[in-house]
Amino acid sequence: MLSQASGYAVSALAFIAAMGGKPVPVKAIAEACSIPTAYLAKIVNVLAHKRLVSTQRGVGGGVLLARAAQDVMLYDICQALDDPLLQPRCMLGHAQCTHDRACPAHEFCAGYREDLATFLQAKTIADIAAFETERRWGTVRPSQAADAQP
Image 1 (tube, rainbow, N blue to C red):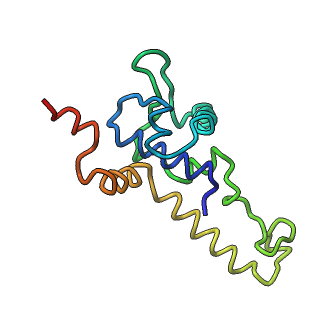
Image 2 (image 1 turned 90 degrees about the vertical axis):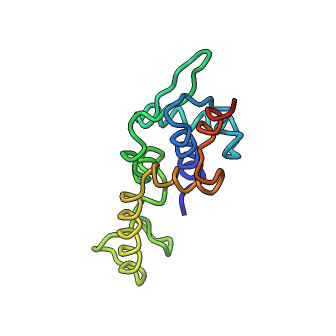
């Protein structure tokens, strides 16, 4: 399971991607994704330093993806936030899990970590944004619905 910070980051970036390239204020993202605003601001700061997002100040400012949503892998987010899920720890609580120091669960854990890394490297923010857009709003993004209203 992703850490809370990584999970929040994935939700936030998917929401930003669903907004169609417009800057989104941190407060609006936090409200839409049910994330504490101060915590999200810290996450955004880290992601900006890692060049996954960019920020614009002032009126009309907010958070933007620094690259296309299909180019941001979930793995990139976990790596940027030092998610413990990516750390090679022993599930039995022993020292760092290695082939030289294998516990009875090592083979299972090594395979699980490999599968997890493969999954996180294959799934993108675009994938999550498409899922969330369908789940929240059907097939119409909120930015499209606002443009269609008279």
